[in-house]
Image (cartoon, rainbow, N blue to C red; front, side, top):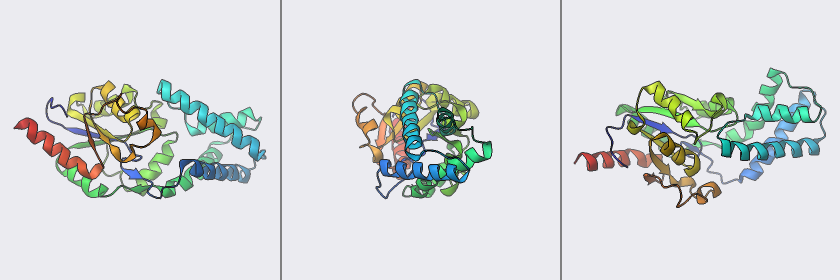
Length: 257
């Protein structure tokens, strides 16, 4: 990790960096359960939808906009995709409370699978005690989903600011989403480090924004990471968050020495 001055701020990704899903269930199986729960919530709210038609249309929307937001780095919320799907089917737009309840039902099962990574709280407590500013940037289609995950893992106490792509309309690796944190801190990019598990979002985004970066490799086998190996090169890498304090100390001593 290059040394361009003292490190003052650490920006973390959330999923597979601070929290993970150790059960090993496939995302496809999880998503099928989530869609079924969503359909049930809509039925409870009075929507009379053809199940197969709705599920096919909603799945197509998710695929279409996921591909788009990966290329234009603009976030499209799950609420927008759901409302667009219902409109396409000629169904009335959901009232805000109905939409919120449906989205909560959609994410409820997946939220039950996430757990803090090993040694997470002692690590964050130690970093905060050393005087580092701690921030969080999460790519996600629903801000309330992320807020519930943060609350469930008791992480809100550590991070300021917390930036969620669904709330700001931008996604990593868009450099503008990193600037939100830098501006809040009043720090230059060279004094901040982005720590995350995704090469194409966390590491590339940090490089585009001028931040130092550390790749957490516990999700290295994901196809999105495999596709970028050899093309996006992190400055440093660690197996998990528990290894971050030693890396920061090592690089500081090496440079200062």
